[in-house]
Length: 298
Image 1 (tube, rainbow, N blue to C red):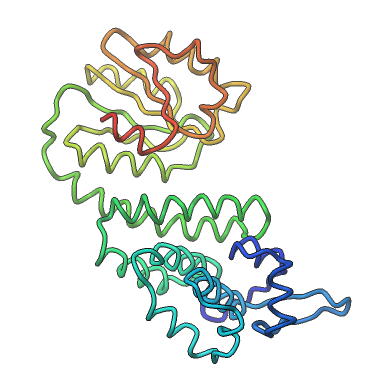
Image 2 (tube, helix red, strand yellow):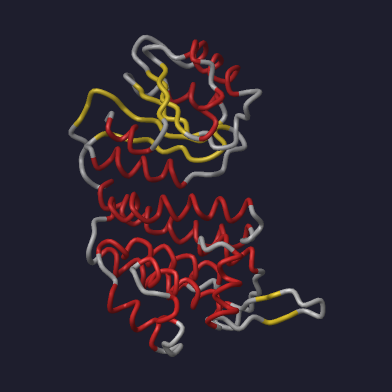
């Protein structure tokens, strides 16, 4: 995969690095920090090497280094200096940049090396909260801006899923100690974004609860079937794009009327909760604005 070729516009560099295109142009003109390729119509284009260099320069600049001084460094010295100055304050930024580079170049090795270094210094919980969640939020914005393709997003998401599954298995083998409720985790029909739900499954198991993970695109009938086997159920529904804003409130009404009883609860999380009619919220139905908020309520 080292032969993967990718070419970026200056707008792509802005989206990925956070440095405004106007500033990048000034840095090029005054300090020659990058050497873009040019189309026949004189439009700037950049390769992966230029993107990596800009990300390193961005970290040095945020760390207090002046662009005029950075421009005097050799291409070999810049990444060396980055590694020398990485501190707790900048490690998160550096890791996110490394993961983005791994994604852009479909580079498994860079992903694993970055992840293993993080895990040698932090817990998996800290890595997920401090690095993976901001990374996924940035990737979502990059996807919306057209800077990355669905292939890039699927590549990095799959690798994060691998780590979630490994860490989930380690806590899943333990016998549940909290018996007051059973958590049923699922995604509604046509919803496929399950990373957040997978992490919640890890946290629920870590907190000593029994968890039944049903996964994506679960019909209401399947929720009804689960009621035959468990009492005191807490259903957790993660809704990112489905049900959409026109259907989310009728969906909640359906769950309330057909699934919930006096011993069960229904928790919702995800982007679509902002379209929920507050009049539907009750003692049995709760919404959470973030993963952390939900975990704090376990």
